[in-house]
Image 1 (cartoon, rainbow, N blue to C red):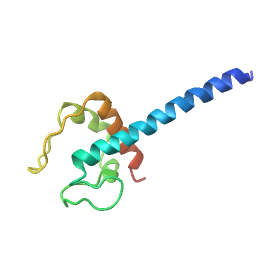
Image 2 (cartoon, one colour):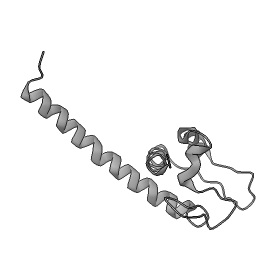
Image 3 (cartoon, helix red, strand yellow):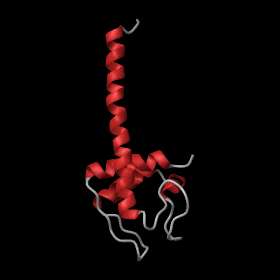
Image 4 (tube, rainbow, N blue to C red):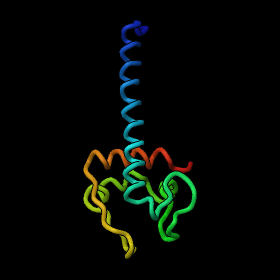
Amino acid sequence: MKAGPAIVLVALGVTALIQPAAAEDIKRGERLLARACGSCHALGSGDSRDKAAPAFYTLGKRYPVENLEEALGEGFMSGHPDMPEFTFDADDVGAIIAYLKSIQQR
């Protein structure tokens, strides 16, 4: 059974709506992390300013980035004494995870 032109157009329209939202989330996640974390952590490239702070683009080598969702939403605490506690709302957490996924080294 072949898909009719209307079905194809609807599918393309849904895809077009989803992609800009994902791009907007990625940009928002980047802005959030740059503001809250960029003074110590490298975001998309380069070395972290603080040698103890892992570069965000390498986090996927340690564990699945999705594992950060709960910590970001409930309060991210680290054993590192210089790292402040951060809490983000659910929309921000989604944007941050989208950004982190987009920059992971493969």
